[in-house]
Amino acid sequence: MVESKSQNTNSSEVNDESLLRWRRSNSYYYDWINRIYKFVVRPNSKVLHVGCGYGDLLAAVEPSYGVGIDSDEQAVALAKKRFGYLDFHVSDPHELNLDEKFDYVLVCNSLGHWHDIQQVFERIKPMTTENTRIVVSYYSYLWESILRLGSVLGMRRPRSYQNWLPPSDIENLLNLSGFEVIRTSSYIMMPKAIPLLSGFCNYFLSLLPGFRHLNLTNLVIARPKPVALSDEDLSVSVIVPCRNERGNIEDAIKRIPQMGRETEIIFIDGNSTDGTAEEIQRQIKKHPKRKISLIHQGDGIGKGDAVRKGFAAANGDVLVIQDADLTAPPEDLPKFFHALRDGKGEYINGSRLVYPMEKQAMRFLNLLGNKFFGALFSWLLGQRFRDTLCGTKMIRKRDYELIAANRSYFGDFDPFGDFDLIFGAVKQNFKVVEVPVTYRARTYGVTNISRFKHGLLLLKMSWVAFKKIKWLGFG
Image (tube, rainbow, N blue to C red):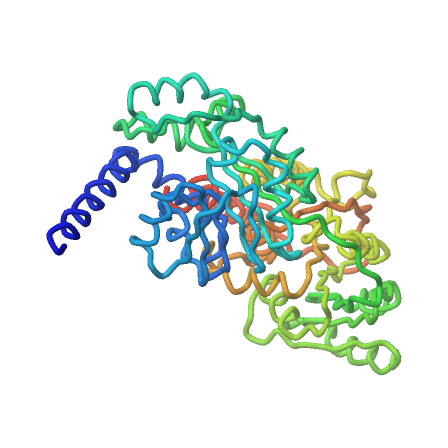
């Protein structure tokens, strides 16, 4: 009996080794897949992987609690053996039924093997919350012939059943199942490791318009369709960074509207020399019915530092930045609030480049620079940003806290505060929406922006974004 058990054990080990051999032979591709998902999935999250295979991807994203589901009994048995700290179950995805909620649901290269994809997505829906992200990667249908040839040559596991779907069909199936797509992207033009050629294809060609449609892997990130809230569900904190804006303080207080259940105004004074802080104190006494406070920036430097200090002191459920120069009108703030309240987006970004702006509102070189950086960051971030430097931005406080907790990924070098929020919103897979504002000329004071000095800093931040997002931090 002991000898028989030993023989069974040895046979099992041989089978396990043969199952993993093909994966090791394609380690370059699977390392890329792991990197894509590690960029998208926040570590220490609750993660469900539907179609988990041998468990490698679920382990790679480092969940605090991970559950893997697969209909392949051998694969699940091997996953349990290799990653005993994760939970794996044999289950047909079409019959998935777990009484749990997850932060992320991963579907990697498996939906093509399901005969009813919509049914599986509908099974997943009860396991999500409003903050859950569905992350789907799938082979491009343009690669069908190449992958079939790879199966014939033994370079890829043969599949008896395969749907070949373009991203638009996947988006439609998600929509029918109660999900909303946040963004899409594509990766990996060369899935095999070939010196110099793989790097050139995957780090350069795959990023270019036109060429990127030839990439092997399409990525779709979605969220459950949101439910609109009422005004009484949310309170608002309006953060007003200011430096030498004394003549604008009273107008700011008069023009900032009441929003939601309660609206507070927090001024952060950046060591003004024109009496701004004293004017704020005077206006606080003059408007006792409004909830207004003053924070002194102290040793901090830059608008970014001021915004962070204001956000840290805020009591509202919703945080919004209102520049003290009032060039972006405070009267537009309810548009931002309604977009957030109604679930249109989770990060609401203002855009000054849609409506005609007042004369003298923006210098010509500034206008060209804003258009250039808007186009550049739209490409870098994979989402439309027509205007990256509009001062008005709105986000839920709980979502900002996620950005702040994961700030180290990009680093702490943004003096404006705009890109800290933009980069963070994309990294956390928030739904981004732009709200046009009418840009007006200043009526008091002078701008604190240095076109050339700050333009060079923006280029530096663009390079950081390129490496961290386009190259997934491994460039």
